[in-house]
Length: 293
Ligand SMILES: [Zn+2]
Image 1 (cartoon, rainbow, N blue to C red):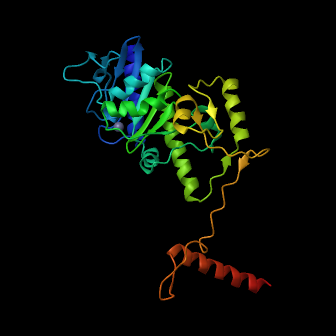
Image 2: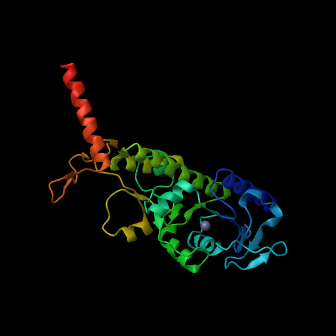
């Protein structure tokens, strides 16, 4: 059992590294192996090149129980301990710095819009835990309020955290977080992000029961007055109310020409590059339209 789990951690580490979810010695992985025992990746090793004998065993206080000479548990163990303490259903924790998800975490943009049915059904929302200095109690405390209701979190200016019932369950959630971040970024670059309606989100939430998808908390697509309280009890997903609609079109971005054209004291009109481009585009369209008539 333990041998199999050690080999599993090696494999998950290799995948994190191969997918570019970690650089250098970043990231850490742990698995609950008993009522008071965890198997944890050691400090200061590349997750892409671990061997089974490198893993260390700790208790739920993070104290070293056994390990090869010189091996210490990951410096981020406090954050893992918090997850096991608050969530008896959690059997494994994976932490990494996948670049797109971490980009959202740096930009302060939570992955909480209802845009992908699969993500709504499995993870619900992926909020951002406030910044805490890595490897300190501060980081463990900053993630704590979100752990009860979420299996996936962004860590502000740092990375991402995924919890699962077992090792691969937690790893796959990390993959989903990064994949969702990638798709969200592309949609936003394309300038449109159609969102699922609140009604559709409720339908997806009901699918959890149908497919037996375990989730720590329900989705709450309704706007709640106190977001900080809501995050602790449910998965706050941004889904607009649109009766009878499954998809709600992205809001139309305001015409760049009309926005904030500034006129200097000398009467000179100042245009941004975007405004100038929009004006030229409009002129070209108009000439084209005139030719056709
Ligand atoms: Zn980290």
